[in-house]
Length: 592
Image 1: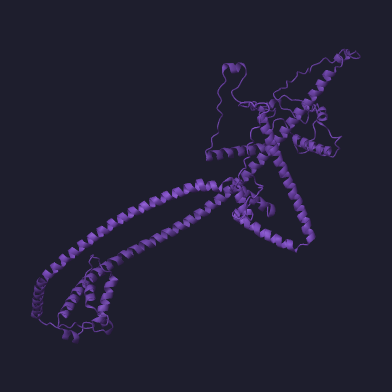
Image 2 (image 1 turned 180 degrees about the horizontal axis):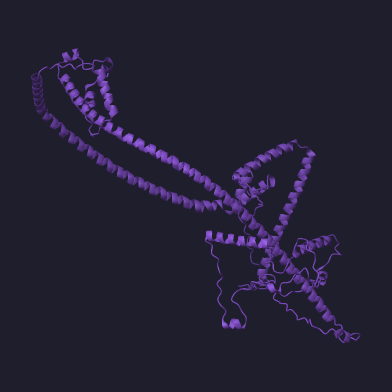
C-alpha cells in the first residue's frame, strides 16, 4: 500500500538499501572520495529577524526535500480524495498536453481559412486554463471545525439563507479550483518523475552489484590460478638454481685445468719461436749452394708460397704486446709439425764457424759505411736544392692564394651588383610593370574577354589567361562557322535577323543612355551657368550705324588622335593598319 513518504519500504528493500549504502561507502573509501559539505556563512542578527538565508532556495515543490513526520502518516488509499485526477497512462501531464496540442493543430490545419482560429479567438478561449500561478505562493491550511453541535442543522432548518449568491465569489471559487487542479497536476508529474527516477537508479545499482559480484568472483579465480602458476615457477626456479650451482663448480675446475694448459702452451710457444728464429737465421747465413741442396721447407705445397720475411713476422712477438689465442698457437704448431717431419739440417757444426760469418758481416758493414760517407755530400746538395724548390713552391702558393682572395672579392662585388639589379628589377615589376598590367585598359580588356567567353562557352569561373581564352574563342568561332556553313539558309537568315534585332536593341539602348548622359551634362552646365553671376561686357560700346567689326575666322580643330584604349581595341579586335587607315571613327562599347 503506497504512502506519502517514499522512504518507508518493505524489509527486503530496506536490507537491499543498507547493503547498497555500505557498498557505496566502501567504494568511496577505496577511491578516497570525501563527501564535500557546502560552506555557508551563518546568518546575522538582521537576517534572523527578517528570516533571510545566505544561500539559494533549494525547495521548489511540496514533495521535494520535505521532512515528513512518520507519526502523522496517512494511508491515501483509504481516504477519499478531495478532487478527481485523470488516469495516469504512463506519460506525464506535459507530454499528454503536447500530444493533445499537436492533434489540435493538425485538425485546425485541415480547416478552411475562414474557419481557422485567429489570435483573438484563441485569446478568448480557455481563459481559466491560462491563469497565472504565482510560484512562491504558499497555501495555508484552513482550520476546519470538527466538533459541531448536532442540533445546529435542526435549528436552521427551513429558514431562509440571508447570504446572497455572488458571481464574483463563484468565479473566484472556480479559479481557485482550477488553480488547485493545476497544482495537483504539477505535483502528480513530479511524483511520477521521482518514482521513475528512483526505479531507474534502483535498476542501475542492481546491475552494478551484479557486475561487482562477477568481477569479484573472476578476480578470485584469477588470483588462485596466478598463485598456482607462481608456485610452479618457484619450484622450477629452485631446480634450475641447483643445476646452475653444479655447472658453476664444474666450470671452475675446467677453468683451472685450462689455465694450466695455457701456461704450459705459452712456455712451449716461446721456446719454439726462439728455436725457429735461430734455425731461420742460421739457414739464411749459410751458402747459397747448400741452401739449394737443402731447402728449409721440404713440403712442395708450402714451398711454392714460402717467404723468409713472412716467416720472421710469423715467429715474431706482436708490437702491441698482445697475447695470441690458443687456437692460433695450435694452428702454427700443426703447420710446423706437418712441414718439419724430421730433425732440422744445419750447415754449421761448430760455433767458430758462425763467428767467422759474423766477422765477414762486420767487414761488409764497414765498407758500407765508407760508401755512405762518400755519398753524404751529394745528399746534402740534393737536400739544399730540395729546400730551394720547396721555398719556390711556397711562394707560388702564396701568390695563388692572393689571386684567389682578389677573385673572391670581385665575386662578392658581382654578387652585390646582382642583388642590387635584382632589387631594381623587383621595384620595376612592382611599380611600372604592375601599373601596366593592372591599368584600366587592361582590366577592361580582360573583363570584355571574360564576358565574351562566359556568354559563349560557360558561366563558371574562368581559370585561364586572356590569350588562352582568346584561343578558345577563336576555336569556337571557327567551329561555329563550320557548323553555320552546313545549316540551311533559312535558319541562318532567321538567326541573323534575331541577332540583328538584339544588336539593334542594345545599340538603341546604348544611344539612349548616351543621349541621356549628354542631356544631363547640358542640364548641369545650364544649371551652373544660371547660378553664375551675370556676364558684363567690357570695352567701348559700339556707335549707332557704325560698321561691324570683322568676323573672327573659325578655328579648324586638328584631327584628333586615337587614345590608348582605342589603339588597343583596333589592334586586338580589328584589321587596323597604322599607315594605311586614317581618320578612323570608332565606337568603344567599353567606354572612352
